[in-house]
Image 1 (spheres, one colour):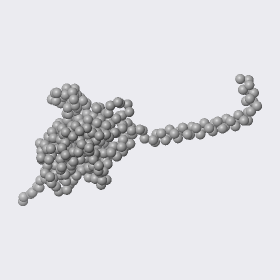
Image 2 (cartoon, helix red, strand yellow):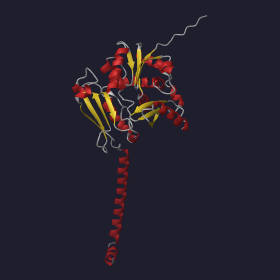
Image 3 (cartoon, helix red, strand yellow):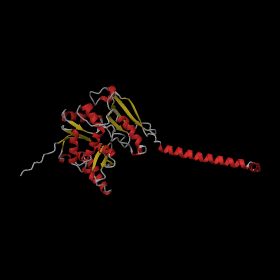
Image 4 (spheres, one colour):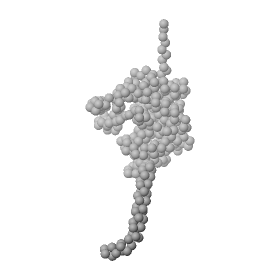
Length: 345
């Protein structure tokens, strides 16, 4: 210790300069750390998932005719912390063709990109579209369903979206939402002309209007042709994802998958207890029932809610839409022409 004191006295001036240099170094180092922290905060977080594309098995073709097995691809959505994929699907992905999901299965509670797409149910609905929709008519639907209609049913389904709006992501992925959105758009929106974005946006807006306004807006999208509308229960979530500032939906799972009436009674009681005034729709989910509900009572009068089996709707009482086919979560309507009201003196 004494030796160190002597050195300090002998080299006081040098030590002062050393302290100055050291202090400057600490300041510069602090600025560097601060800059690194700021850069890190601006750098988008890593994507929480990885999308892999591989060949699909021949068994994937059984529900769809006219599809080349070599053009089917198997998609897997994986996360770093789980061994098995959290979602898998079969996509028609021929050269020059827009990615068309033909089946989808989620291995987690919340939907990943899409709700369940059962290939047998989808094939049955597409067959019904060929039966009920004339070749010269148009059918308006969400972009993924529109692609299946064009590719499999062979009917005019003009709507598509380069922005791939309505894709669903788990709530845990809220961080880095912008990067996730860009990743999804790059794959699902590939090959769609940019000018189709406006038309699809008008379709979303029409679904969130009341029946009269929505019917008029959809008729304009049909451009004078006879029009049909195909919707699925999952579309209520797609619309909420596409217009989160305008429309909301939520869900609650109830035990007792085999007793729909009991679940509906329990759902009504639960909504009353929690002062939730909107309508609800019930969907089987394995051994449970999922209740999709609208937190706001006014949302039950939006066209999309009226076209789907919500407790506040009655599809047979619609004035501008005629129900032509229904299977599980799928509902297909013919858009009626607007009645001309004549006056007599």
